[in-house]
Structures are given as C-alpha cells and as structure tokens.
Image (cartoon, rainbow, N blue to C red):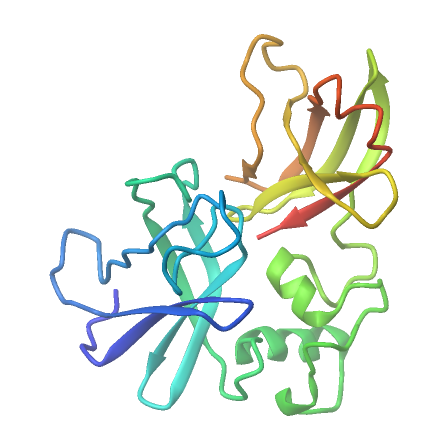
Length: 240
C-alpha cells in the first residue's frame, strides 16, 4: 500500500490524454486511490469529453511521487467490467521505478542485463531495441509480459485446426494481461473477432477479450458471424 499522500496516480492513453488522482490513505479497505474515467461509446466521431476513453482504447497506469515515475511491474485484477458503463474494476499494482522516463522500469532493465550478461547500464537499454532478436521490441515484451532475454518466448498466435469453418487458435496467456483477437482480409483493415475458450459449452456466449488469471497455453475458437467469416483470413493477437 502507498501511504504517501503526494503520490499521483495517472491513467494515460497513447495520445497523451490523462486522468489523474491522488493517493488517499484509508480511502477504503485495500484501496489507495480511485479513478473515475469518463467513457465514450464511440457512436460519433467526436468524444463527448476530451478525457473520455472508448471501451477498447489502450492505456497505461503510472504513479508519480515527487520527480520519480513508477510503472507497473505486475498487475492483478478482474477486467470483466472494464470499460462498461457505471462499473468498477479493482486493480492491484506492483510498481517499479522508471528513472529514465522511457516506459521501462529500472528493475526490468536490470534483469534483462543480468540474464543476457550485458556489460552496460540501464540507460543503454532502449524501449525500441530488440534485445533477444525475436522481432519484438523491449517495450512490447514488457507490455506483453514475455521474456526479453529469450528469443523463443514472445507473443504469438497459431491456428492449429478448424472446426466447421471456425479457426481454433493457440496463444500463451500471461497472468494479469488481457487478450483480444483481430481479423483482416487485406492486412490493412482489422476488426475485432469474438471467440470462446475451446471445449467450453457451445451455447456459451462468445467474448471479445480474455483476462488471464494464470500462465498457460490457451486455445480459443473464433466465433464469427456469417457476414464476417468470408472476409477474414488473417488473425492477430493484441495484449494489454
């Protein structure tokens, strides 16, 4: 628990829009802060508030105490209600110092240096570099929760078989991350693909995202409506 009252918790989108709050001791049992995030349904081209987020928009959380920025090293929470109107989501964050301010925690960089046996400082580890040469940048590996020092450990989605025209796909899910699947027919326009866990009740409602509670290989079956299936031949995995 953070008990420093000058700590500021910031939710920030990729475009720089921020929603902020301060830490309040004894706000509620197990809680340090509460962020009220305005949500926009995306029915019109303009948001009803400059800070309104759309349900699927990417964001990051950070905590600033004085001149020091802390980034999540680990996140736990149930995202079932995330992005739904008037709902609440409780997130537990383990924070790490980001002294350089480049989006990578110092401790994460130091682990990468130690595992690869590099003779450098944390300032030399850049977000856009690919330390293990697997095609994912260091920042992408941090976000995905994969090992940036292991070229065999990265974010991948594999079609393993078909079930009555629906592709069955495997990916390794990392606890605390949320996964969505996008499909395309031309590698230019991408659209969300609903899916259900393979082997689950065929009458169960399909979902648009999967929140991992452990680390394991997950098999999902795409559940595409008749008008969508003929258009989509390529799929990709997005992690938040």
